[in-house]
Every structure is written in structure tokens, then in C-alpha cells.
Length: 118
Image (cartoon, rainbow, N blue to C red; front, side, top):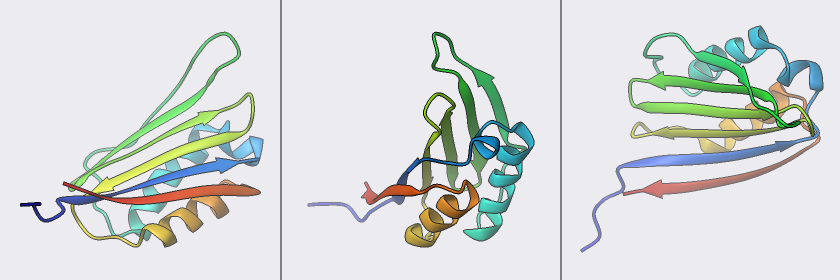
């Protein structure tokens, strides 16, 4: 017997993003807050945005806990890409979420996958 899905995961890959958007701490922090509002999720504490890496693979990473799970993102400065994951047991429009992310970071191309979990 297969259990009912426990939640939904959206994986969003963004390509050819605007460099000034993915390399800016404040822009990424505002993204987390705005995305929570957009998909109607309640943040659990402030977003964590940290710049780290080495050997040409530097970039910001984001973790935003939400009351129903989390939002994570990794931004690769060397090729202007972003990899965003949204997971929640509360329903959200994953396609709208992906489009918001694409527009926010000015991505010229994007890939999107939605998966039920559980």
C-alpha cells in the first residue's frame, strides 16, 4: 500500500542569471522573504545567507526554514546559475514558484521539476 503524499518538492535550476542578483547578499535575503509571501509560507526565523567555496566554485547558499519545511538555494558565481529547492507539506503552486524564481534572478533559461514526496 502506497501512503498518501506527505509533501511536495520543487527543484528549480536557473541558467544565465543576472550576476549582480546572485552575488548580492541582500538581494538573496529579500528573495527568501518575498518567496515565502508569494507561496504563502510562514518563515521560521530569518533566512541564513552565507558566502563560501573555493577553487573557483564560490557563491552564496541560502537556507530559509518555513513552518512546513524549508527553502534552500545555491548560487554559482562562476557560471551565473542558481539551484533552488522548495519542500513543504503545505500545498503550493510549484509552477508559479519556479516562474517567480526565474524572473527574480533574471534567468534566461530554467529547468523545473515537481515531485510528490512520501
